[in-house]
Length: 325
Ligand code: BYC
Image (cartoon, rainbow, N blue to C red):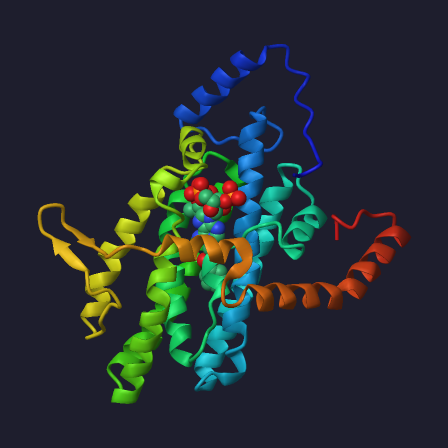
């Protein structure tokens, strides 16, 4: 998928020895750094995952971005503005991390804009009210934090370090979401109804964010073998459910799941069945907002063309590469 390659041919050992040494480093908890020997499959998996993660951050700016002008107070507006800006910054760290593996920004953006690259399912749903800002912050950022706290221990150094920084910021994002939902849930009946409606619409798509069930997750085996993921999709999803259910119930909010029950033996909250057909439809491009989201990213890319041209001209004049800029 990505054209660039790293020259791995200088090392005199054969691939099996190199692989054993690579796996021993991972088992010893060492980080793999750019330029170190790595199996081609490790490099490809990381580029796939990190670039999709970067796209998710940037596309994820769109649902919240439309509420900056609709925030109910100046304080809320400033906080949301800072959050959306943070997400753009996360995209930048992540694109840089993928570039250390030989992917170029142009290739990654091209795959996004032509609809070939995936990004998180969650951003293909519409944000319909101010309460959605609260639910996105609390649930979506909350889910992302669990996943990214795991990825902060990933074996690839640049990805793991980007995650540490991103998680620190995501914690503020989750708190602002929590604050919005608590305010609405203890507010007027109309405000509480807004929070309930937002929870009804976002709960199931948020559970899907952790990826398909372990039995349908083709990438997990290799990602876990090489220390990129250390927990499975289902394990993280269960931790999230156990964390969220009591917190939201304590505010008098109800889950849109008649089958939800507490299993005292395992200590887990058990949900009803997740609609995985919906998940596959959405990530294959047929969700409620896929066309709008990609349309907005394409328009932004075209609008930024003059900036890229100006930077390239400046770099040429000063004999710099545009990467230095
Ligand atoms: N959405 O083998 P599997 C944020 C795809 S943004 C779409 O289990 P893997 C925020 C998967 O790519 C945070 N596609 O995959 C930003 C694969 O297809 P390909 C976003 C999904 O990689 C702004 C296929 O399904 N976080 O917090 O082992 C505002 C089979 O899946 C999804 C990240 O990106 C999905 N949810 O595990 C607010 C975290 N799930 O690629 C908030 C980084 C699966 O083979 N990524 N697919 O064609 C990961 O941790 C992992 O990639 C996943 C999936 C857990 C998502």
